[in-house]
Image (cartoon, rainbow, N blue to C red; front, top):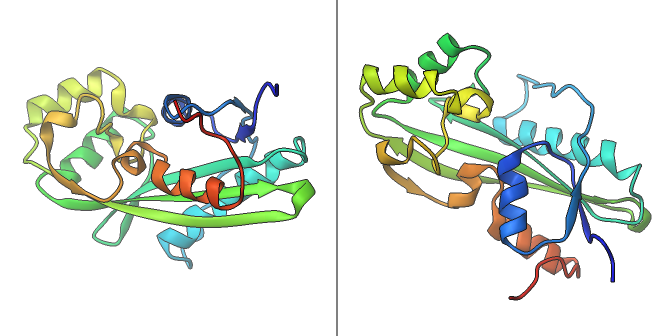
Length: 196
């Protein structure tokens, strides 16, 4: 019996949790690369390319295994919102999202070097926040949850009560569109997820 069937090229605890909850046997290998955003490309093309760069960086060390990578951003009114760089940045992000609908875009890539397999795609979900009280924003940011998340919030965490509505993949909003991941891995013939 193999120790693992998949390599996750990500340091995201949320992606690890989602894969683990789905029954995948995997290990984590964090790609050591700078995520470079190209402003001449669409947000969707950027996250696809960044995810593929992560997968390619890791697959060289694991040529006999499929490597899964992802990259998530938030887009509001055509403007890309990544992870906050400071608490004041997180406050600004949440104020800009207050009462508005935004998109959560995740690029997903799969690379299996020995099979010559390199695949990438993206998923888009929409989220609308209620009006966010300034006091809640202050408390939420002070608690630290927003700091490593695109758009400065966790839909499955402290921001849940302030979500007015969402459409599309819920797990995409968390950071990994599991429906797409499962369908893609199954489609390429990988038996990654336990059925139980």
